[in-house]
Length: 381
Ligand SMILES: [Ca+2]
Image 1 (cartoon, rainbow, N blue to C red):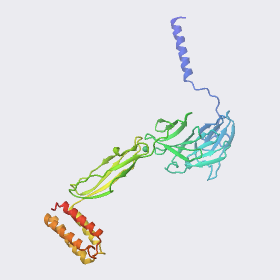
Image 2: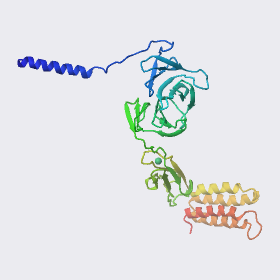
Image 3: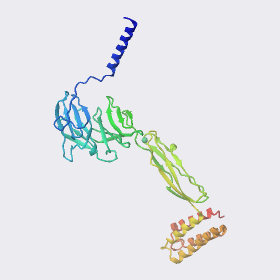
Image 4: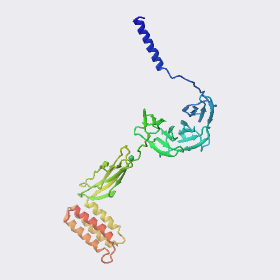
């Protein structure tokens, strides 16, 4: 054999091998005729086989499930138009458990249905919604070695949900890169595989993922009122998580409080756990008031004390506070301090102890504390 012929022979051999590698796997058979009679199909979408190699097809447009023997011969079909049980509005994903029961995802009814090998209805679960037990677009189903049922809900928010064989919710699997989890399969050691319409394939282990967010607990009052110039020390918050434990040191606090400028400020607290679950944000409202604003608030409180005060008593206290306001606005802080002292004396004189006057010590204490706070804000001696 010349070199040229040998080279040609090798090239031919390589070509032949390549053709062999690229060819499709051997077709054993195919079956199906468009239509709605037994064994005829209309938009079949899902397929599964049982332990005896029988073939189940979710025949979407015919709204039923068809069962064929291992050679593709029609065995039975089932559907029921009972609106309560077993009606297929849009059967899609299908799986067979170890007992030969058939699990079907019925998208348009937002539910999963289970049938025995003869097509008798066994149970259903799910309704439309976004809670753990509900579905938005249940497309794919799979079962693990214990016949637990996994549902792929083709919605970025819902992800994969695991149910026990009776349809009781167990847990949810979610990933931040979910776009439309639709296909699902379980391997021999119960790892979970997900095909997502966002062009991603996921594999999840058997351990239950952490899907529980940490919680933040505010320390101190959710509302704080200060005077301009006061010091503000934030009381902080604590955080804890079901897996990570104490996450207090990981809290991200945003504290915009500026006590040199009157206004209402919102302090925010955020934290997430090591699995990326984000806690519900907790906030605190801090109001920084000018001495004038506190004085005006005090006037309002005094005017709301009828009864136990009478109109004359309220008028007297209000006049004193209006004088304080006027002095503050004129910049006569020393005068305002003296006027506040007179107000405090007046309040004390109206307090029940030691004789039976109208104000309780509690009521007068609230007024006096605020007067003292205004004095502090004015740097009274
Ligand atoms: Ca957690």
